[in-house]
Image 1 (cartoon, rainbow, N blue to C red):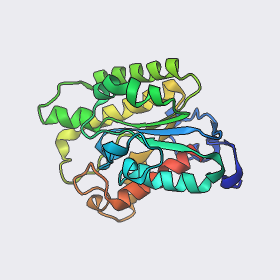
Image 2 (image 1 turned 45 degrees about the vertical axis):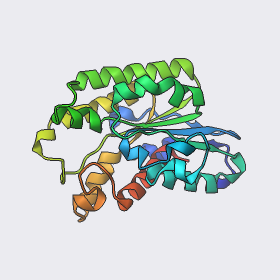
Image 3 (image 1 turned 180 degrees about the vertical axis):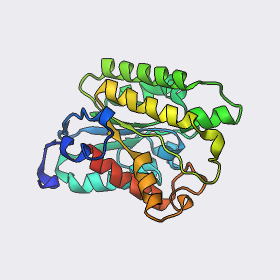
Length: 243
């Protein structure tokens, strides 16, 4: 298929080889002229974006320096005829409750046709540092409620839920486990229940490390990706979403 000339793009074929069995129900992705794509999350998505330009679709400063920047450039080039509007509204330090508090302005008000969410690492990191007391169940239930609210307001939205990930280096040590794995599993459960596309970031970072690179090559502190890490994320995202 020629990506540059499709209005209807099917994610199921490529995603089926990437997703865990629990999240294989993948909708077709249909982009129309003028569609809005929104990236939401914490500092990994934020990636030093410029808040002053956040209302300007496709603005390089607004997109930050991370995977949304990589993806926006690729998508705008490959689908030039569609006139896509791509936004990044990730905010450093955010947890699920923080997303919920700003959801009307920073998500629902933008009316995205495709919404990509990566959230979860701060929900455990802040707990480990004594700044938050949320349990994995609070993360799961809050995330589920946020998705329910989103689907009620935007019934036609295509949801993309990204797998929370860490690499065992820097700030990430044995104290993160097994709770992080529980939270990662809960994110997959939320995606499955919502019929969302699942982007397997942890799986692909694990494969990259097993192939011979050190964890710090992909994320020096174990959480925030390097340039290579963000590029890998963009590659995995496109393979999973299919656009």
